[in-house]
Every structure is written in structure tokens, then in C-alpha cells.
Length: 376
Image (cartoon, rainbow, N blue to C red; front, side, top):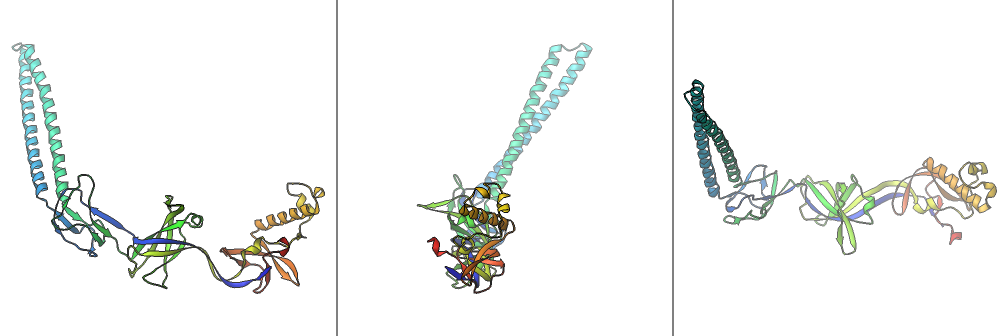
């Protein structure tokens, strides 16, 4: 059976389905508990990084800050009092030591003042530690007060708003989500699910084509990212997610759209091609004349003198295949005057049906052997 050398396209693609989402998406939450008193943005509104989105009632946190600052003033006063008392004891100790030197004061008096000084040093250290703790409480109160202002972490738009004015949010157990802010839709990503039997042909950096039902007949383009190694299982069907980065300057692709994806594993347009079966087919009984007994005997294995005719022919075919592999060549057989004639070729892109011929003396219309009827 033969098929002519033809001129056409080769397309080896891996199909998948994925969902479009913005390249950047952030859930903006509340880190403190309180009542929402103002909301400044609405759905689809453009926002900038740092822009005020909403405000939680600051009154309880302003009161907390005032209390923390008052506690800090009290702690600082205790430090000053303890320091003054320490300095006074140090002066009394110095006078007692002077009197002791002149013999007018007992040794016990000096020892009492030394003990009092050590104890007062400890009280000074304790007061300073309490002052440092009060400082940290003031800083925490200021942070809590600043968190009453909910601001956008990125430039983008409000994809979803999950709060209303007057609503109370609680951050006691988990951070409640107030807004979903998405980046500009000029860049999007697709999380495509690739079946396990196809994932071996997908790698990072492949060209990707995809379509969406909103724009039938129009193709969009992207580039594949790394294959994630966390499988998605649905019954007996296993797939692996692959992120695809795509550009859409007109921002027509919207979050949630379903994309029909094609990973371009190999592609060649308008090339000389043959059926892929031709690379592994040879006529029954064919034996390469160019391989001599010396060629076979120079390789490891039995000597030709110990081989039958069929074994010798198989060894010759193997020797020729090794030579061609080292030079990047493949063999095909073209029917000429009713007889198959071997041709050497080099191949390029291939799909599940055709392979591209990039070097060789094949011509369009040559009948290439793709199956020998005598084998079946």
C-alpha cells in the first residue's frame, strides 16, 4: 500500500478547556472587627493602588489609641519616679560610705543602702520594661486605627463588592473578604485542564491558541506556563492544570469566560509531507546491499558466518538503522517501475498522521510505501 508525497500542513495540537481570569486578582479583607460606615467604590469601578475603598467606624480604635497613649504617659512617669528614687539612694549610699571611712557610721548602714540600691535598680528596669510594653501597645493601637481604612493593594477594577454601608464585619476567626480587586484585563491568564494522556506533550513556552464563544471564529494567542503537578480528579478522569498567559489589549476577554484551548506542540504550514507510517515500513525480504559482512562483523554480536540468511538480513537492517540515526537520517521506500527503492530523508515536524520532509530527493506525487501487503 502506498500514498503519494503531498504538500500541506502539519498540526500537532493538544486540546484543553480552561477558564479566563485576570492576571492579577486580590481579595481585599478586613483585619479588624467593626461596622462599615462608608463605601466609596462600586462594581467595575477603576481604582488605583492605595485608593480608599471603605471605612470601618474608627471611634472604638481612636478610644483604644487614647487609652494606650495614657498608659504610656503613666509608664513614663513611673520610670522617672523610679529613676529619681534610685538616684536618691545612690547619694545616700555615697554619704554613708564617706561616714564609714571616717568611722562615724556603722557598716550595716552601708550594707542597707547597697541592698536598697540593688532593689531600686530592679524597680527601674521593671518600670522601663512596662514603658516599652506601653509603647508597643500604642503602636498596635495606631495600626488598628489605620486598618479602619480599607485601601486597594493594586491598580485595577472592582470585580466584586461584598459589603454595604452599615454592615458589621468580624475578623475574630478569619479575615472577611470585602472586595475582589482585579488588575487590568489587558493581560489575562487561563487555567487549562489537560488530560493525563496528553500532558506529556505539553511544556512551558508552547504557543497556545484559544477561542471563546463570545467571539466565534476569532482566535486569541498566548504562551503556556509550567505544568502544575497537583492533579484534578473527577471520577476516573485525571487532568493537570496549566496556566496560560495571554494579552488582550482591547480587554474583550472577561473573567469567567470558557476558553477552548489548543497547545501547539508542533506545526508546519505548506510543507512537503508523507504519512508517518512510511518511516517504519520496509518491504518483506528487503536487505540493504550497502551493508557488507565486514560491517556487521565489526559490531558486537554473532558473526555472519554463524547466521542464517534471514538473521544476516536483520543484522544488516539494524546496522544501517544505526548509521542513519547517527547522521539524523531516516529511510523511506518509493515505488519505481513497480519496485520499492530506498531513499534517505530528514524529517521535521510531525503530528499523528503526517511527518514533514526537510531534506531528501522526494518529489510531490512520489508513491511512498506505507504498508507491505505480504505482511498481512
